[in-house]
Length: 149
Image (cartoon, rainbow, N blue to C red; front, top):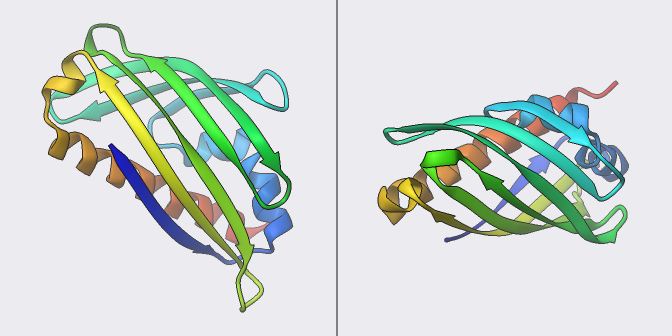
């Protein structure tokens, strides 16, 4: 499954870049995130609780940042296990550019694969839920970063 989108964030690119690399800010913005721990500048571990259709599960996994081009973007890849519910893995390329109003345009292209019970739910439900979670994350991220220090 593939997704892409763009969001205007009312903050300078340097602040948006810093926030994309701040585990505390990301933890606040990721839907269902119970824990997000930064292991290094390029590795994090996460624990999330999500409901996708009739399936509720806790996922734990690892996230890796690569192709880092500060403050323009990076590639993020992750893999998580949800026990009997199945697994998910995927990644995204995140691009930041200056917006004419002094803010930042964030664009992303993402792909994901799910297996186990989750895969049995059907592509439309998975795609719809993934799009909803992405919108929730970016709305919360734009609000949090836009408020600034």
